[in-house]
Image 1 (cartoon, one colour):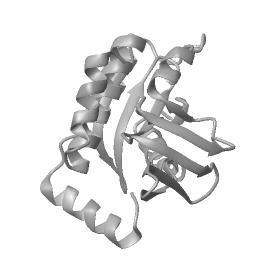
Image 2: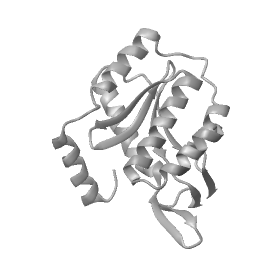
Image 3: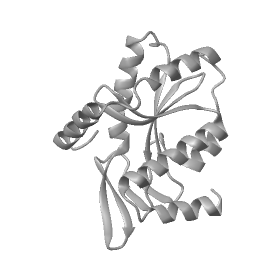
Image 4: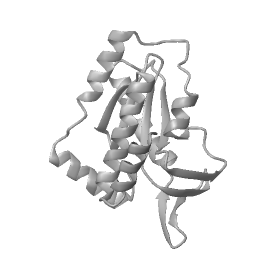
Length: 197
């Protein structure tokens, strides 16, 4: 991340959580598109899930939970809640994003089965921004900082989708974006009832 991007990201921490989250998602999506040539669709409502983004590649679909935090994320990788420590006096509990994303993966997998794409592998990814420090005990293998994911990514050699199929699947996911206010409201009610999405 260049100095200007880091300064912009730090400046945005003074804004609302929605603005901060949206900026983090946009930065992640842009980086995955430009550095890894992934086809990205953001902000989907599928089944019971509000999904930050999906990445369609020739070998699989990644369901991505994006976290735009600064400070230190700590805890045990398999705990229900992790801690986000902004300062020694300012902390926040974070529902384990791996657990959160498990439902999202399930809903995407079900959609793919219903639409004739059942042979495509679906993988969970949790991507934090590069300003966070991850101090997780037994960190789950699908949790990364953005730059670490980009630097370590190797496209599998086996492709299950050609370019036309990648485009068709991306178009399918695009149908689940920009949902109506009624769908958003129903999702928010479920989140407030169950405590997570």
